[in-house]
Structures are given as C-alpha cells and as structure tokens.
Amino acid sequence: MKPRVLFLDEPTAGMNPTETSEMLEIIRGLKGQFTILLIEHKLDLVMQLSDRVIVMEDGAKIAEGLPQAVASYPAVIAAYLGSREVGATKEVAI
Image (spheres, rainbow, N blue to C red):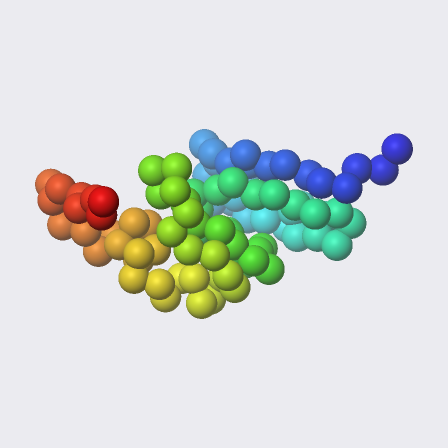
C-alpha cells in the first residue's frame, strides 16, 4: 500500500536550528511523493516548504493562499509576526 497523505504535527518542536535544518531537507525530499499536511509554528520553515498555506488563530481560519501572499496579510502579521503590543487585549468581532 502506498500512502497518499503524510501528516506532520510540529515535526521540529524542541529541535535546535541544526536539527530543524536537517528536518527541512528531509521533508523537502518527500515533496511530490504524496500530499503533506504540515502543522508548524516555525514560519520560516513553513514558507520554505509550502505551496499553499492556511493560517489558524484560536481555532479559526484567518488566511489561506500562497505563502508569500499570506505572509503579508495584516491578520497574519498581527497574530504570528509580533505586531501586537505586550499586554494588549484582543478585539473580537461579533
């Protein structure tokens, strides 16, 4: 049986930069063999590996598309790239 999907849930969690780089190359070598679903908080790794991304925050999808385009979305920047002020409360639209 040949798998069609590989699920990776934070495969680089707890890894140092050298180990992360090695894992990046392993995953890169697997691309094209099957669909890869990658859950990861290291955005540089995500941007290097992904053909398409979905960005989640608090269980809700806040962006979807090509990695470079999604990285420029204000909601993604605010959630993951640190534009929020320390101690600020989050506004919720109802």
